[in-house]
Length: 347
Image (cartoon, rainbow, N blue to C red; front, side):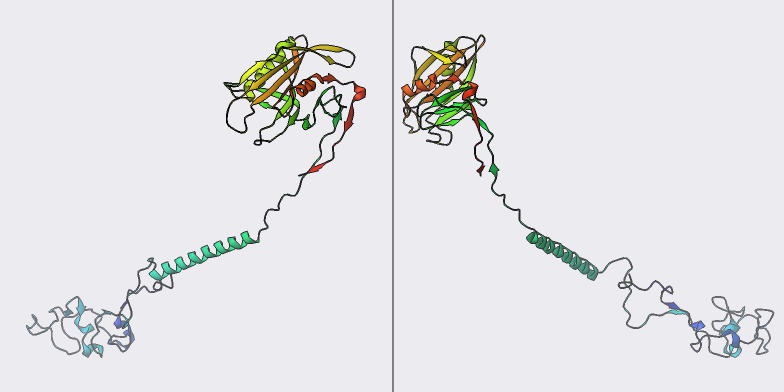
């Protein structure tokens, strides 16, 4: 690099030959006298002295063969022949005070400092540039309210005065629930089966006192399920047992009442059914434990399956109202069905 090394044109290695410089003790070929054509002689052709024999002991550094030690002819350095002082010996020169040249290819400490400063500057620019970009980017807009439009559903009139009807999706059957209960025909609720409980799911449901002791609690509820087999009483009893075993403590005391006959009116006929009731008693000091619960089921059997309406409640709903709820189960003629569209809701 030009900043940290010597120029590549310096190929003299710091060595100069003074013989090539005028006036520095060298010689110039144009001023040299003519040399004998015969080459090197044994005597001096200028002095006219005859050739001598063996060199005198005090002849100095000149050899007997007319050559200076090192192979230089005597007349090449004789002032009488050349007309100027003897040629100076070559020597290495170096400008005074010039520091030694830095080795090429080895970066200096200043180079490393410069590289480090540049790297830190680039990192700082990236960091602050990213920070500015982040602060300038718009925040995610908050989600606005969402409007929900419920689907149209079939509405049928209640048959028990002052009560509300809970109808199937197509309105083909319905039952009524007492005041304080909330029809939820589109909700499915129940309990998953485990190793110690059978589990049960109910559709076309209603609920009473939802959340009275936690989000999953309720004073009571109702809904429709199915059971295998064409025995209505057995189907009703199994449904009651599955609900008790899934919803209440394993140590709860269960007392079944005798099954009752019931009828279910359809569009053009009436079908026989069976109604089963059970009382559940639980012990405990927890304020959320329902001390007494009434569970009932009404089953309408076909040849291979039974449709079962279930209801369960604590003492906030009377046993008589549980029986009335179950007996209100019915088929609904098409002429008694109407369709309504609930108003939209915003959440």
